[in-house]
Image 1 (tube, helix red, strand yellow):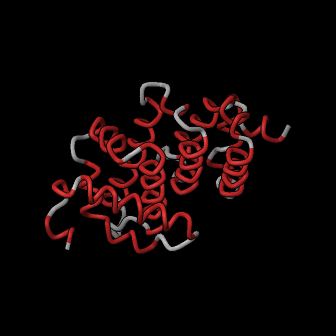
Image 2 (cartoon, one colour; image 1 turned 120 degrees about the vertical axis):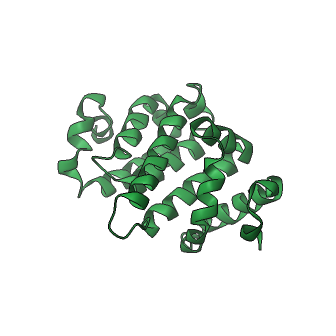
Length: 194
């Protein structure tokens, strides 16, 4: 009952809106738990979950960390179902990520991307690479803008040090990025490999 009301497509603005911003992290934890514990039922509600993720990445809401935690759970637990729409959902998520990065880099006083957001982005990228492969992530990011993944990694790779817990996420990040560097070493600038 509670899950049905949270995932109701007609009440996304109400349940996940700007007025509810203080409750969104708790709702996000609940939704991640639901996806992990009941993946078959979550797959039936996938369009609503996707709508929530894109809504949370919206510039008016700015709940990137919650959106990316939910998105990581979706791509890890629901297999290829999120990719069944010819990449439309993944493309919307990637555009939301890169728009947020651009906003924090260019429109804030400090011109710094918050460590919590970069940590969530690295965990999402790593989870996606572990579950679907490095090439799938590169192809998807290149569909947004050619070479944007390596541009982000070249400028924001220092944020990898913030991925320390939980240990599963740290392992995912280490394995995924090590595999990415091994498979696509020529795409990185030489100073990044030292």
